Length: 106
Image (cartoon, rainbow, N blue to C red; front, side, top):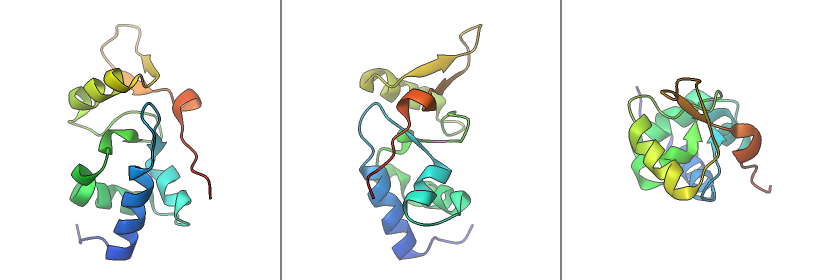
């Protein structure tokens, strides 16, 4: 995976840093907020630099957190009061984007 363009990366990180506690954005939402249609490029930025910002607030379009980081994300969601939806057996969760989607002011 090539390293993201520095200006694009900075724009992505600025948007993610501005997501309030308890809310979330999908990768595509972050891309749209900076005038891009490249959610995968947002994912690349998060893979390289995500530890610099509240990474758990960026989720897949389904509301599911980053793969292999679900438990750590869940701890943050619980601490921040992020609205979650659970599977019937309560083993799988996702952020309720209908309630928790953040839309930054332009």
